[in-house]
Length: 287
Ligand SMILES: [Fe+2]
Image 1: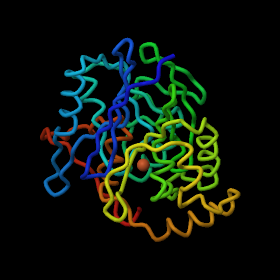
Image 2: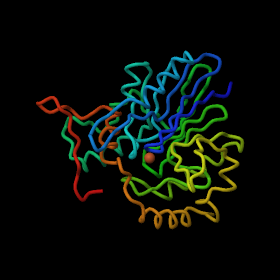
Image 3: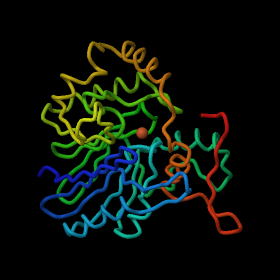
Protein backbone atom coordinates (compact mmCIF):
# COMPACT_ATOMS: atom_id res chain seq x y z
CA UNK A 1 0.00 0.00 0.00
CA UNK A 2 1.34 3.49 -0.78
CA UNK A 3 1.88 6.13 1.86
CA UNK A 4 -0.53 9.06 1.68
CA UNK A 5 0.41 12.38 0.18
CA UNK A 6 -0.50 15.01 2.80
CA UNK A 7 -0.86 18.76 2.42
CA UNK A 8 -1.45 20.64 5.67
CA UNK A 9 -3.08 24.06 6.08
CA UNK A 10 -2.50 26.22 9.15
CA UNK A 11 -5.22 28.62 10.29
CA UNK A 12 -3.34 31.27 12.26
CA UNK A 13 -6.57 32.71 13.69
CA UNK A 14 -7.48 29.54 15.59
CA UNK A 15 -4.12 27.71 15.44
CA UNK A 16 -5.91 24.82 13.73
CA UNK A 17 -4.29 22.50 11.20
CA UNK A 18 -6.42 20.98 8.42
CA UNK A 19 -4.98 18.04 6.50
CA UNK A 20 -5.70 17.06 2.91
CA UNK A 21 -4.83 13.37 2.58
CA UNK A 22 -4.52 11.92 -0.91
CA UNK A 23 -3.88 8.51 -2.43
CA UNK A 24 -0.93 9.12 -4.80
CA UNK A 25 -2.13 6.36 -7.16
CA UNK A 26 -5.82 7.23 -7.57
CA UNK A 27 -6.15 10.93 -6.55
CA UNK A 28 -8.94 10.00 -4.14
CA UNK A 29 -8.71 12.11 -1.00
CA UNK A 30 -9.92 12.85 2.51
CA UNK A 31 -10.11 16.19 4.29
CA UNK A 32 -9.47 16.10 8.04
CA UNK A 33 -10.69 18.89 10.36
CA UNK A 34 -11.60 21.67 7.90
CA UNK A 35 -12.14 25.21 9.23
CA UNK A 36 -15.09 27.54 8.67
CA UNK A 37 -13.80 31.03 9.47
CA UNK A 38 -15.76 32.96 12.08
CA UNK A 39 -15.61 36.59 13.17
CA UNK A 40 -17.01 36.60 16.73
CA UNK A 41 -17.28 40.40 16.92
CA UNK A 42 -19.64 40.47 13.95
CA UNK A 43 -21.20 37.02 14.42
CA UNK A 44 -20.27 36.30 10.81
CA UNK A 45 -18.96 33.17 9.09
CA UNK A 46 -16.72 33.37 6.06
CA UNK A 47 -14.97 31.00 3.71
CA UNK A 48 -11.34 32.01 3.25
CA UNK A 49 -9.97 28.76 4.72
CA UNK A 50 -12.50 26.55 2.94
CA UNK A 51 -11.84 28.23 -0.42
CA UNK A 52 -8.07 27.76 -0.03
CA UNK A 53 -8.70 24.06 0.51
CA UNK A 54 -11.09 23.84 -2.45
CA UNK A 55 -8.52 25.59 -4.69
CA UNK A 56 -5.81 23.11 -3.71
CA UNK A 57 -8.15 20.17 -4.36
CA UNK A 58 -9.05 21.56 -7.80
CA UNK A 59 -5.41 22.27 -8.66
CA UNK A 60 -4.37 18.71 -7.71
CA UNK A 61 -7.48 17.26 -9.42
CA UNK A 62 -8.41 15.29 -6.31
CA UNK A 63 -11.76 13.60 -5.71
CA UNK A 64 -12.83 13.91 -2.08
CA UNK A 65 -14.39 10.76 -0.65
CA UNK A 66 -14.30 11.66 3.05
CA UNK A 67 -14.60 14.78 5.21
CA UNK A 68 -13.49 13.65 8.64
CA UNK A 69 -13.47 15.16 12.10
CA UNK A 70 -11.09 13.93 14.77
CA UNK A 71 -13.62 15.22 17.35
CA UNK A 72 -16.21 17.91 18.09
CA UNK A 73 -13.86 20.89 18.19
CA UNK A 74 -14.20 23.69 20.74
CA UNK A 75 -11.91 26.23 19.11
CA UNK A 76 -13.07 26.55 15.50
CA UNK A 77 -16.17 25.87 13.44
CA UNK A 78 -16.08 23.04 10.89
CA UNK A 79 -16.54 23.73 7.19
CA UNK A 80 -17.62 20.12 6.54
CA UNK A 81 -21.12 20.90 5.16
CA UNK A 82 -19.80 23.59 2.79
CA UNK A 83 -17.05 21.28 1.51
CA UNK A 84 -19.49 18.40 1.09
CA UNK A 85 -21.81 20.62 -0.94
CA UNK A 86 -18.99 21.73 -3.23
CA UNK A 87 -16.78 18.64 -3.38
CA UNK A 88 -18.95 15.67 -2.46
CA UNK A 89 -17.69 13.05 -0.02
CA UNK A 90 -19.12 11.69 3.20
CA UNK A 91 -18.70 13.20 6.63
CA UNK A 92 -17.44 10.99 9.45
CA UNK A 93 -16.56 11.07 13.16
CA UNK A 94 -16.09 8.59 16.01
CA UNK A 95 -19.27 6.74 16.98
CA UNK A 96 -19.18 8.03 20.56
CA UNK A 97 -20.10 11.53 19.34
CA UNK A 98 -23.54 11.03 20.89
CA UNK A 99 -21.97 11.33 24.34
CA UNK A 100 -20.60 14.75 23.41
CA UNK A 101 -23.93 15.74 21.87
CA UNK A 102 -25.85 14.71 25.02
CA UNK A 103 -23.55 16.77 27.26
CA UNK A 104 -23.84 19.88 25.12
CA UNK A 105 -27.55 19.43 24.37
CA UNK A 106 -28.07 19.84 28.11
CA UNK A 107 -25.74 22.85 28.41
CA UNK A 108 -27.28 24.61 25.38
CA UNK A 109 -30.81 23.44 26.22
CA UNK A 110 -31.49 22.37 22.65
CA UNK A 111 -34.99 21.41 21.63
CA UNK A 112 -36.12 18.07 20.19
CA UNK A 113 -34.85 19.14 16.75
CA UNK A 114 -31.35 18.29 17.94
CA UNK A 115 -30.77 14.53 17.93
CA UNK A 116 -28.00 13.15 20.12
CA UNK A 117 -27.45 9.93 18.16
CA UNK A 118 -24.79 11.23 15.76
CA UNK A 119 -27.22 11.01 12.84
CA UNK A 120 -26.12 14.42 11.52
CA UNK A 121 -22.92 12.72 10.28
CA UNK A 122 -22.94 10.44 7.23
CA UNK A 123 -20.82 7.81 8.95
CA UNK A 124 -20.03 6.95 12.56
CA UNK A 125 -16.77 5.02 12.85
CA UNK A 126 -16.33 2.16 15.28
CA UNK A 127 -13.04 1.57 17.06
CA UNK A 128 -10.75 -0.41 14.75
CA UNK A 129 -12.95 0.11 11.70
CA UNK A 130 -11.21 0.30 8.33
CA UNK A 131 -12.15 2.43 5.34
CA UNK A 132 -10.51 3.28 2.04
CA UNK A 133 -9.22 6.42 0.34
CA UNK A 134 -8.46 5.13 -3.16
CA UNK A 135 -5.73 2.49 -2.70
CA UNK A 136 -5.08 3.61 0.87
CA UNK A 137 -6.60 1.62 3.70
CA UNK A 138 -7.20 3.70 6.79
CA UNK A 139 -7.88 2.48 10.30
CA UNK A 140 -9.76 4.24 13.08
CA UNK A 141 -8.29 4.20 16.58
CA UNK A 142 -10.47 5.61 19.34
CA UNK A 143 -8.27 7.96 21.36
CA UNK A 144 -10.57 9.44 24.03
CA UNK A 145 -9.45 11.73 26.82
CA UNK A 146 -9.78 15.26 25.42
CA UNK A 147 -13.39 14.32 24.61
CA UNK A 148 -15.11 10.91 24.81
CA UNK A 149 -15.47 10.74 21.01
CA UNK A 150 -11.93 11.56 19.86
CA UNK A 151 -10.58 9.39 17.05
CA UNK A 152 -7.20 9.03 15.36
CA UNK A 153 -7.08 8.08 11.68
CA UNK A 154 -4.08 5.94 10.65
CA UNK A 155 -3.09 5.21 7.04
CA UNK A 156 0.28 4.01 5.78
CA UNK A 157 3.00 5.86 7.67
CA UNK A 158 0.67 8.67 8.78
CA UNK A 159 -1.51 9.16 11.87
CA UNK A 160 -3.92 12.08 12.26
CA UNK A 161 -4.15 12.35 16.00
CA UNK A 162 -6.54 15.24 16.66
CA UNK A 163 -6.21 16.73 20.13
CA UNK A 164 -4.03 14.18 21.89
CA UNK A 165 -0.37 15.00 21.30
CA UNK A 166 0.69 18.50 20.31
CA UNK A 167 4.21 19.32 19.12
CA UNK A 168 6.77 17.86 21.57
CA UNK A 169 7.65 21.32 22.96
CA UNK A 170 3.97 22.12 23.69
CA UNK A 171 2.78 18.83 25.19
CA UNK A 172 -0.68 17.30 25.13
CA UNK A 173 -4.34 18.35 24.93
CA UNK A 174 -6.51 19.41 27.85
CA UNK A 175 -8.93 16.90 29.39
CA UNK A 176 -11.37 19.15 31.27
CA UNK A 177 -14.19 19.45 28.73
CA UNK A 178 -17.45 17.51 29.39
CA UNK A 179 -16.63 13.79 29.25
CA UNK A 180 -12.88 14.45 29.19
CA UNK A 181 -10.66 12.08 31.17
CA UNK A 182 -6.92 12.45 31.76
CA UNK A 183 -6.43 8.75 32.51
CA UNK A 184 -8.07 7.83 29.22
CA UNK A 185 -5.83 10.39 27.53
CA UNK A 186 -2.75 8.71 28.96
CA UNK A 187 -3.89 5.36 27.53
CA UNK A 188 -4.74 6.94 24.16
CA UNK A 189 -1.30 8.56 23.96
CA UNK A 190 0.40 5.25 24.80
CA UNK A 191 -1.54 3.61 21.94
CA UNK A 192 -0.36 6.31 19.51
CA UNK A 193 3.23 6.01 20.76
CA UNK A 194 3.06 2.24 20.15
CA UNK A 195 2.84 2.90 16.41
CA UNK A 196 6.13 2.38 14.50
CA UNK A 197 8.68 5.08 15.46
CA UNK A 198 8.89 6.50 11.93
CA UNK A 199 5.11 7.10 11.83
CA UNK A 200 4.34 10.69 10.89
CA UNK A 201 2.10 12.29 13.53
CA UNK A 202 -0.11 14.98 11.98
CA UNK A 203 -1.22 17.51 14.57
CA UNK A 204 -4.59 19.27 14.95
CA UNK A 205 -3.10 22.44 16.43
CA UNK A 206 0.17 24.23 16.92
CA UNK A 207 0.65 27.21 19.22
CA UNK A 208 4.23 28.09 18.23
CA UNK A 209 5.71 28.45 21.76
CA UNK A 210 8.44 31.04 22.01
CA UNK A 211 7.51 32.40 18.60
CA UNK A 212 9.06 29.46 16.69
CA UNK A 213 7.87 28.44 13.22
CA UNK A 214 4.65 26.43 12.99
CA UNK A 215 5.01 22.62 13.32
CA UNK A 216 2.27 20.62 11.58
CA UNK A 217 3.70 17.12 11.93
CA UNK A 218 6.25 15.25 14.01
CA UNK A 219 7.03 11.54 14.38
CA UNK A 220 6.33 8.90 17.00
CA UNK A 221 10.09 8.79 17.72
CA UNK A 222 10.20 12.57 18.36
CA UNK A 223 7.21 12.37 20.66
CA UNK A 224 8.50 9.41 22.64
CA UNK A 225 11.76 11.11 23.47
CA UNK A 226 10.89 14.72 23.96
CA UNK A 227 7.22 15.55 24.59
CA UNK A 228 7.29 17.94 27.55
CA UNK A 229 4.12 16.52 29.11
CA UNK A 230 5.34 12.92 29.00
CA UNK A 231 8.76 13.25 30.60
CA UNK A 232 8.77 11.30 33.85
CA UNK A 233 5.12 10.31 33.38
CA UNK A 234 5.35 6.59 33.96
CA UNK A 235 1.71 5.87 34.68
CA UNK A 236 -1.79 7.25 34.21
CA UNK A 237 -1.97 8.58 37.79
CA UNK A 238 1.12 10.76 37.40
CA UNK A 239 -0.07 12.06 34.07
CA UNK A 240 -3.60 12.73 35.36
CA UNK A 241 -2.26 14.67 38.37
CA UNK A 242 -0.13 16.86 36.08
CA UNK A 243 -2.93 17.28 33.53
CA UNK A 244 -5.65 18.12 36.06
CA UNK A 245 -3.51 20.75 37.81
CA UNK A 246 -2.67 22.33 34.47
CA UNK A 247 -6.24 22.25 33.14
CA UNK A 248 -7.50 24.07 36.25
CA UNK A 249 -5.50 27.12 35.15
CA UNK A 250 -6.59 27.19 31.49
CA UNK A 251 -9.14 29.65 30.15
CA UNK A 252 -11.97 28.41 27.93
CA UNK A 253 -11.11 28.62 24.21
CA UNK A 254 -12.28 31.95 22.76
CA UNK A 255 -14.68 30.30 20.30
CA UNK A 256 -15.97 27.39 22.41
CA UNK A 257 -19.55 28.69 22.56
CA UNK A 258 -20.12 29.19 18.82
CA UNK A 259 -17.90 26.24 17.86
CA UNK A 260 -19.61 23.58 19.90
CA UNK A 261 -23.13 24.62 18.89
CA UNK A 262 -22.22 24.28 15.23
CA UNK A 263 -19.82 21.33 15.39
CA UNK A 264 -22.12 19.14 17.48
CA UNK A 265 -24.54 19.49 14.52
CA UNK A 266 -21.82 18.23 12.12
CA UNK A 267 -21.33 21.84 11.04
CA UNK A 268 -24.97 22.60 10.24
CA UNK A 269 -26.25 25.79 11.83
CA UNK A 270 -29.13 25.70 14.31
CA UNK A 271 -32.56 26.21 12.69
CA UNK A 272 -33.32 29.81 11.64
CA UNK A 273 -35.95 31.66 13.67
CA UNK A 274 -39.13 32.98 12.03
CA UNK A 275 -37.33 36.10 10.75
CA UNK A 276 -34.94 33.86 8.82
CA UNK A 277 -31.95 34.64 11.06
CA UNK A 278 -29.87 31.95 12.77
CA UNK A 279 -28.97 32.62 16.40
CA UNK A 280 -26.40 31.02 18.68
CA UNK A 281 -26.96 30.90 22.44
CA UNK A 282 -24.59 31.90 25.21
CA UNK A 283 -25.20 29.87 28.38
CA UNK A 284 -24.26 32.02 31.35
CA UNK A 285 -22.10 30.63 34.13
CA UNK A 286 -22.07 27.08 32.77
CA UNK A 287 -18.65 26.70 31.19
FE1 LIG B 1 -10.18 20.02 20.52
